[in-house]
Length: 474
Ligand code: 5AD
Ligand code: SF4
Image (cartoon, rainbow, N blue to C red):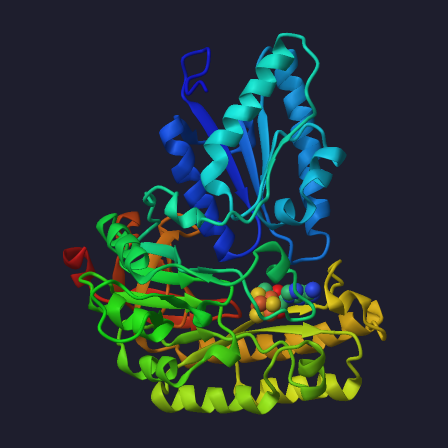
């Protein structure tokens, strides 16, 4: 494989990421795998020799979005070839996993299809794509288009990925767990990401140390079902052969330089006593929890195969708040799951009223092929779903505004992450994951500073960096 283009420039890769934080993490790791092959990051597909679409399959029409983007990339590829150049197109992520060869059949311009478990094989796949391209350039017939790797390999991709490089603005993601064994009846994750797998504790702690050395002060532990974590204990561990998430968080908090810890996404059934206790014990663990409940109706939760009822969720919330009174709660909701009646939906609205969420994600149920929900009777009409979603989102938006407003006047630590939209502005996050805009020097990005919150809005707050001391602290 050539790392340098014929014009002497380094090769460039553009990675477009769709979907969740897990995909953001995977995109960073793909960049890490490609860097030793001479690929620098491009700002857009126009400047790239290789475009990777890191796709997400959870939303309806997700794959259609990928296909329309692929159509545009095909046109760009044709154009490049008329100019004597080329463009390599790769599809990664859950659509790649779910659709496999179908992608290359529908869009033959695609060179590589790679599932989430096989990113460490990107160099081989690129080499194979390059071999095919040189056969084509020599005017020979191609031995079938596309190069495919969507296996769930027996060895873990984590063992093969290089050490992470990029820490953005003090905040880093660390993937500790993948896959899911829960099989909620609406969800594709158990099919696209495979069975639950937890990385060994020593690998996780080693990666955390690398991230800290690279400038991270906040670490967000990631997993599709992160609180089901049960990683192999380190060799010197005295108790038990595996560690829970609670134990991992305690160990992480002991490492010098860890200012903030977060974890996402959790399942109510896996919120054990120890994990709840950690919320009251570990000061670096931020007072924020994303805990999807999906519905407030026991009947619907049962049909969703969620393995928990409304009461279990409400009891968890009470117990979490009793150890951490400041806790901000976030959740996911689905409206219009098959069979959901007005009374079921009212139960969800009542649950929201009872809990009071700081933020939330909410969706109309969408049929995902191959999941049990898609074949259930009593699919809810689109108009009913739309009306329920609007009512639910209005309530959640009111709660989010109230939560933001409740912090106005307080001075809170904000981790600045990026420049704001207006010149001279920077944006950061409070412990409760609210976005805060303040006037400040971009050199403060990546630091935690005290900010006096002055205005609360629907999705953000405005604030003033407290005093001049911060310049010295920077
Ligand atoms: N329809 C609607 N929402 C879904 N989600 C997952 N699958 C579906 C589906 N088929 C939502 C759930 C999940 C979040 C990541 O996406 O709320 O928690
Ligand atoms: Fe999907 Fe989450 Fe249910 Fe697993 S627990 S099947 S990832 S919704």
